[in-house]
Image 1 (cartoon, rainbow, N blue to C red):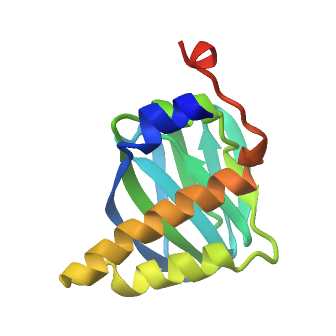
Image 2: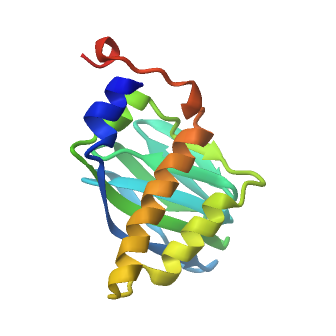
Length: 168
C-alpha cells in the first residue's frame, strides 16, 4: 500500500467535468448506443430501472445500485420505457492517470442499500455543481474524492493490497 500512496495519492487530482440529478419521467427517452466515453462515470440509481451494457455484459440498473464506468470503456444504456427513472450522475477525470482504477480492479457496480453516505454526497453535489462560487468548487472536488473513497470501500477496497511488483 505504501507504493500506492507514494505514486498516486501524494499527487492525486480529480476533476469533475459534469454531473447532477437526472429525472426521466415515464414518457421521456434516455438512451445512447454503444460508445466509448473519455471520462469516468458514476451513475447512482435512485428510482426506476434502466438497462446498461458495459463491455458486452448486460445489467438491469435498479434503485440503490451505483455504477462505475471507467474512461475508455464501451457501454450503452437505455431507460426502460413507460417507467420513471431517476439517477445522480457524474463525469470525472483522475490524474496523474486512470491506472489507479485498473490497479484496484473495482466492481462495475455496488449495492448501496441502506448506506446513505453516497446519497448525501450526490445530493449535495447536485445542489452546488453549477455554482460559480470558489468555495462550492472546492467542495465539489472534495465530494468527488469522498465518492471515490466510498466506492472503493463498497467494492471491498479495504482488502486490496497493491505492491510495486503488482503494478509493474
